[in-house]
Image (cartoon, rainbow, N blue to C red; front, top):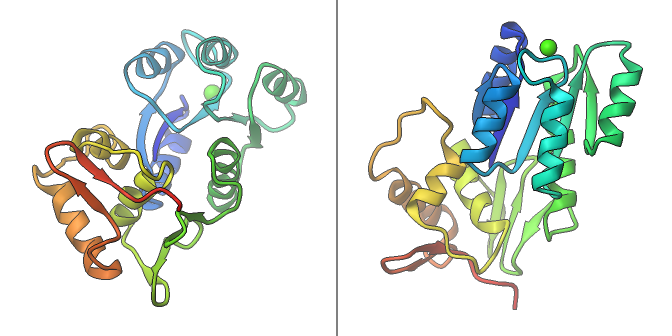
Amino acid sequence: MRVLLVEDDYMIGNVVQQALRDASYATDWVTDGDAALNALACLSYEIVLLDLGLPKTDGMAVLRSIRANDHRMPVVVLTARDATEDRVAGLDAGADDYLVKPFEMSELLARMRAVTRRQGPAAGPVLSNGVLTLNPATHEAAMDGGPVRLTGREFALLQALMVRPGAILSRAELENRIYGWNEEVESNAVEFLIHAIRKKLGSKAIKNVRGVGWTVSRPA
Ligand code: CA
């Protein structure tokens, strides 16, 4: 899952980016509103974490631009303490949730799971296509036998497929969901991860569509 983090405070940005990467989000961090708009024009994101007080284009203008172009992308606003008016204005302008600084990363991660869950086709906290289940809170997957723990990257790859069972994702699309900017990607990284997931969950967990990409089966 790819995240755009928009935060001009370097200390907060560093901590949040590291925590997001540790939680297996492909994370791109920008520090002003213009860079945020550029990133949004170039890449598709599953969620945006948006500070409101930003250099160049401010956060409210970024939010309005997001809502003018894409009605569904979840946006969580990160606001300063006591800025009640900001929070109200942010929610009115289309933010899905907000968090007051300083916040605990565990709470941010839980809210991110909640807002992305509300956007997707799956209603519950666990992703399932009927045979395979994936728990975003624990990074556990199960197929036939008991649950197995996936590594961060294995989880990110399987989650990208499980969000839309039946959709075929190419290598480039999967890499986009797993790696942020400045993260080195080995040429066979996707194949390597799929091999590792199949070893844990069985060879039928992920299907290869020759020359096109990979998919998980649609619910029966
Ligand atoms: Ca700020």
